[in-house]
Image 1 (cartoon, rainbow, N blue to C red):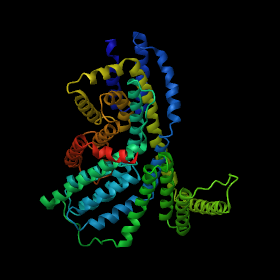
Image 2 (image 1 turned 135 degrees about the vertical axis):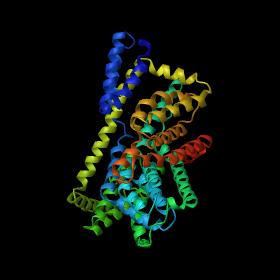
Image 3 (image 1 turned 90 degrees about the vertical axis):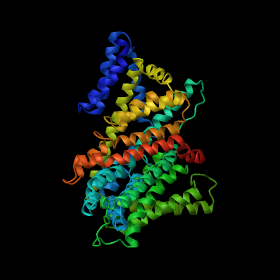
Length: 516
């Protein structure tokens, strides 16, 4: 029995998580219990746990993961300031007169919110509170409306900037380096978050197109399921549409553009996103709007000018032109700070910043506690021989590299019924991905196809997290059965998306190869 302790450990973990006990404590507790069981049974060296301190230090000094709380803060500010609600309302009125138009608008808004917030729960709840009642009043079938809202909300998992992609980039980079060491390479290459962001853009847009084609096709074949909105719904004018759509798009361009162009690291871009979201929230609240807009303009001009003509005033050879430019940059910086302070004053006065920071700290602590606990779990799992067992098992599966990946995809999909994406990413993937890379799979392509698989787990009954989010926000007339049946066509579309990327890997690899 002692030689199977690693398998019993994994089963015990799933049981502990399913019991409802806090996830991080479940993971760490199971790790400690099985570490001592392995020690008493003589199959594990307990001194291996001494490496846990190094893992903790590696986590808190990881520059990539610092981007997570900043991106979460950016999304929380956009959610609490009701910018997302304005976008939903405007786009819904713009497309509402078309058959299936409300569904089209929900998917498009879901893509925009995914690229500007990356928070699945907040997006699904916001759409469930705003878009779903409107769709039902317009005569939409509850199953269709529920499926569209759930699916559009989960786009935040695959469209960058996504918390899942940041965690996956870290996991896949470590796995890729481990695989290179095992191949005897000691001058190893690393993978960046920017590469995964670039790789996820086309697959994310492909999924959006699949959803839109389905909605348009269903609207043509079954028009009673998705009738147009009533004539009493006023269509927005051009000013309304631009004021709702342009700010999120500018924020997306600032964040993703700075990462993909190599101007900023993901952490720096995340801070730009958080500052941009603060300015947008402050502007929406009305007071000192002109001052905030001037500050935002000053910061944009400062970023462009400093990139085109950098100035270092501490150098002794700075000429008159450089000194003049430095003075202008200082004035722009002061104007930007004044605009930021005005925006901060607005969000503090409305107590919006309190809610946004509370949400940010809650989600960040959950993610980092899970990653820390997973570090201890993987140490004990390795100590019990689990890593060698998994590697041997994958290498000897029928079908070679393809068979190993197929089995891994099925396991990840099934685990998605019970576990959150963070738990799967930091517990399961570090164990299997080094072997899959050694078998010949491209690490970036592998990360994207696993990301879409994890995204599908958010939709899959009976435990999909998006289903629970919508159940809590949906009107009383929408039943759990409506939600479950509504997501089935979109799960099939997700499977089609996975198949397309499987057989056409260039969808995921062409952008990172061209840009990096």
